[in-house]
Image (cartoon, rainbow, N blue to C red; front, side, top):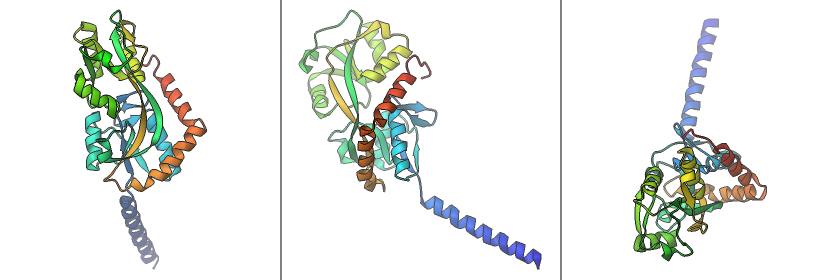
Length: 259
């Protein structure tokens, strides 16, 4: 009799475990990703994306009781393609433009990002307006966007090669490019890590100051979270959490040569 009771309990336990496993399988975690090299906002660490935007995203979704995984999903172009196809639910930080609005729903802006011009030391030139770049050879990152207005100007008026930042810096230093457009923070951090920051200068006038947004794929089942995400982002801005997280990750990468 005792053996029968034990066997009955074992069967009940197995059934319960099967039910729980199917329940958890149905509640799949939100998949988030981001740029693999844009510190201090976001960057790759192994199979994950970390940084200020990743930390803020995780905090928002934790508050909303939504399980998430912030994973590395390839190059920046690949991340955007995965979001377009619905394989990535959320991009932790991205500029907003008309093309991206076709496949992404955007949050309110929550991080400012100055975009600047890097030049070889001693090769500065007068830059006040975008037209001052006409006739010069420029480089910028593959897959980057700097806002609808400048993107249109760049594509129509400028001689611009799209390559990695590392190759862009090489072209600046060997004289085959006159300038490089990049985010001030990731560009400076990468140049410092490669030991070439002292060979470069940043022109005083920024090209533009862009805003980073969170964005959810239109093919994701999580698009309904945006109103609550916006409330959390506003709250984090007002209570200083966003600023503290960004500052923490800036400090973390001063002198860090781990990339």
